[in-house]
Image 1: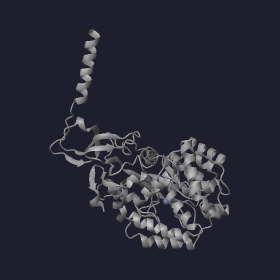
Image 2 (image 1 turned 60 degrees about the vertical axis):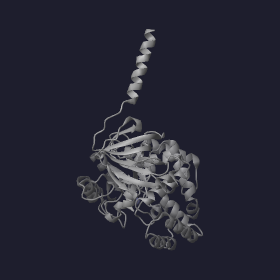
Image 3 (image 1 turned 90 degrees about the vertical axis):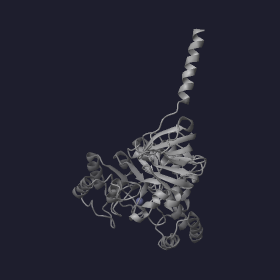
Image 4 (image 1 turned 120 degrees about the vertical axis):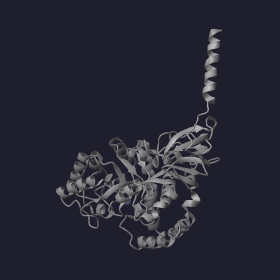
Length: 442
Ligand SMILES: [Zn+2]
């Protein structure tokens, strides 16, 4: 009997605990009755409310546990899906006119990968100071290279080291590496590692024209052992390792090496898939069909630019071996799957606004291309949310819809866990707690 009474009391307290209504402060914004894609797991939290106070998420809680305060701002999320803001891990912002486009497309953080195109460092600081509206910017230094056409800031070991010190001093978040000679690469990595600033970029020994000429020789093993943080452009792995033919065993070994070195890989496969398609025999027809897609993607005023750029590519075909240009999509998806299976950190990036790629919108295109490799929508979303935040050392700031993080979120009409294209069905975007209806952003 004693036991029974005890059980009764335990039961009573559990019920009492469940039904307790939490009193909320008045100065909150509530996205009410929404399905939350927290990115803490792949399970959807139905019938929840997300409470925002200031620029942060105060709590994520079942509707039944709160009473909405009279003065709260309420955004009705009924029938909708709320997910973390997206991160584009590889952009080149050219001017501030496009910053609002990132917000329009739910991209709340960008890693700008070249401090010599535009002024990402200044824009980053102006956005932090509230003087400019735009996504959170992670700013890379100018390209470090001794290649023609790029800032020649690494001609000698001494000048390379001085450049790294200067960029670190100026406050850049990371160093952007480009092609350089082996002894220069070694010096760059030594200096950056000593200062504790990360280095990401292209595999330093190549670039289509140089690799085919056989210039520069920095084997990928050297790069992986150097502390290099992320290889930009997944398809650089094709040219560095599969110039002649595909080899499954070689790919598995390479993927295992990349995984154990803790080097991440940023996808940027939309670029390769589009350019490879254009360069195939009959590429002109593909340009026409892509032009249709672009019209449908609703990127205003971009169609003419797209046609000019694709014509330029077709007329100046770079020296890619034919076998490669036709097999790029197939190789791309194989590499992506192998890297994923080996446990490599994958990040989604676009190269916007390089020719053919648009602020914000291209990230949705990129995610759709990644999904073509056979990854689940949740895995694809990770590359643009949690993986990015963790890689940047900012997982306590953004990347999930959980208590305590910055309120960077996208409200969608459709469920992104069912189809990755649902990320396009944006109703509104919250950036640092500030809410933008889609109509405001168009
Ligand atoms: Zn780039």
